Length: 226
Ligand SMILES: *Cc1c(COP(=O)(O)O)cnc(C)c1O
Image 1 (cartoon, helix red, strand yellow):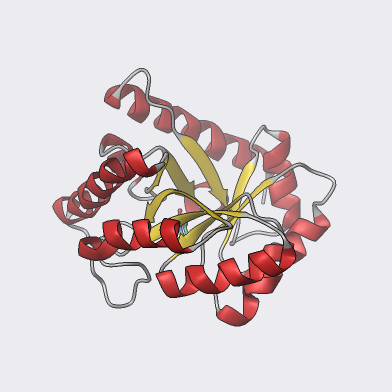
Image 2: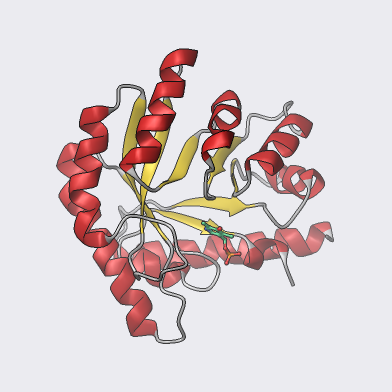
């Protein structure tokens, strides 16, 4: 991808995030995670040079390859994909900055066991299936609060920092808004239990997500495509 194009895409996104966050509140801070699953390490390096530090990948093997090619850079890697149990050890070995796609107590217990054996910790977000789409991962909104507390209670090495959701897959803005509002409500209820991150919003809906309270957006195609 052309460097000037990347810079242009990045500048526009930063400006749009800035406008959206100020609309919510002057004090509202939003972190951008650049979802690099569409590109190779060259593009990641180019965006790093423009000042971006947080990158997201959705496959353990891609994360491993790119992290290794870019090990000279202090990148904050986010894992945002479905984690198969046979990949847990690989992910732990990569020391991700934040695992955003923890989607059950069961998976949490499994990760915790492996963390214990390795003497490591991992920061995670609980993924919520706020639109209740059967193809999407995540805990149902009605169960999310209890599941979150159970994970805190029953794990020793997982640092639960908040929630993540993918907005409803729809043309109907009201449906998307609903899924963000549902997630934000759960996030607010979890704040007294240490939740500080509400990760929601992607290329096509990040402004709406920020309007609904998101403080972390995950943007891929708008950055790296077209
Ligand atoms: C791919 C992906 C994104 C980025 O989506 P874009 O629409 O390309 O911005 C964000 N979050 C998750 C979980 C993803 O898998």
